[in-house]
Amino acid sequence: MNLWNILGDIVILLTASLCLGGLLSKLRQSPIVGYLIAGMLLGGPGSIGLVKSQHEIEAIAELGIALLLFSLGLEFSLKRVIQLGFRPLLGGMLQVLLTTLIAAAVCLAFGMSVKASVAFGVMISLSSTAVVLRILSERAEMDMPHGRNSLAVLLTQDMAVVPLALIMTLLAGEGGIASAAMDAGKLLLAATALVTGLYLITKIAVPALAMLSLHRNRELTVIFAVVTGLAAAWAAHAAGMSPALGAFIAGMLLGSSAFANQIRADVSSLRVVLLTLFFGAVGMVADPVWIVRNWYFVGGVTALLMIGKIVIIWAIFRTLGHTSRVAAASGLCLAQIGEFAFVLGSIGRSNGVVSEELYALVVSASLVSFILSAMLVPVAPQFGRFVARKLRESADIDEPAHALHKPADIAIIGFGPAGMIAAKPLIDGSNSVVVIDLNHDGVRRAHQLGFRGEIGDATQGEVLEHLQLAGSKAVIITIPDHRSAMTILEQVRQQAPQAHVVVRSRYQMHNKSFTDAGAHVVVGDEEQVGERLARHLQSWLESHGGVDSIYSGNESD
Image 1: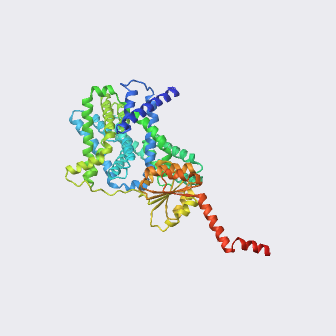
Image 2: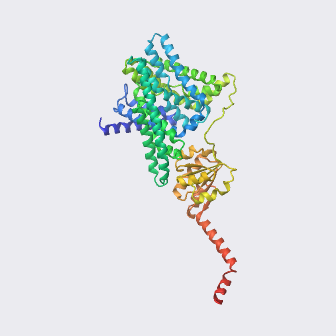
Image 3: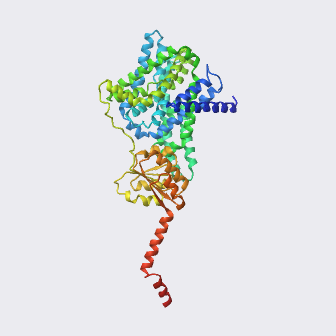
């Protein structure tokens, strides 16, 4: 298809997603629902057919999932994944296994063949990484107990895509157990090689990037992030693994570097666009006419699947020692059928294991569960408390959160000479301090003084949000550029309205604009220079006995 035709279809789909997403946001629903409806109405079977480039858009949209997992890897470095704990990761493995087996057993009881029953269980066992993580991230619930459980289960599910795909292939009768074991061994070797290669590359590339002047070459971080994330996704795909999993591994390896915070902010805009295309592409897979004609069947199957997954996940996490509140909230977050059901279903359909009717049912149920999850995930904490009350358990006991960093008491934005002077009273360690600077040297000096240092552009809200600025008591902005300082000040007042804000102003004429924007104290360079000059002049005059004595001394000479 012509490139410009594809571009036109992308513009049409994004425009419809913008309008419907905005409408749903106005109605206090997730805009994801609007994106799905836009795709369903514009392209695919049973639609008005305005978008023709369905397959091309699907291919482009897959990059959105890769970038989502790459950003998530930056957020959850290897250290943080370990902090998730063994129980959530074990819960993810049990969830995939039990959901597949129970669903297959139910299908067998209704007279389906063994192969079709197992294929159905495989397809519905996974949840939606894109839907759940986006909503939890937007609501800042990733560090809550149900958020950590959801993340661990979703990561386990992504890793399970490869063996599940092998199961679908094995069901088709293409090769025996020995052949499948050989394929699994090859994938394991490929995965090991991929992880090793990415580890070595990041260990070489990160120090090299640190040697460049990040504050002068911002475009380099954007290029570096995109190349790393997409190259890892491509390498994983070439090795027969999930591209999203490859991107996650790359992000996780970079997550412990000083650049993680800034890279995440740099790729966020591109990720949003590609994810919007992804949800639109998912909507185009469904046939609204078929769903309407079979609404009772689709609705009943979707309800049974979602309730069943909630019960299974609740039982697993209760067995692992979580409270009913946390277990139920985790179950509600993960109750939908994930986007990889389409991938696994396509494999089964092409191999003759999955019939057209079964595939249409799974796709339709997935879409309906997406829409319901966009409404249900935000109320997961309330649902957990409701279940706890019904079971007569305390709904007020919170399990401890294990955030990698707690909000700092004081944030210093910009760590040049002015920032270092301002930080002198804080070196005693009585207050926790975070320093944000684009200059690697400034962050290094902050570490030497015992402060937490992060490389990042504080004019971007995502950077400040990740640093949990909302919990800081005071913010000191020492950026000399007026426009940048004003942008940062506006972001700070929006995210941390309670914080005491001190701003450096290079010129006196900007003092009032900073005060009007919400700064509590404005320290002007011109006033400080003038006062220092005056103090020096006064000291010099006093040491020489005044101007008259100086002139007298000169005359006597």
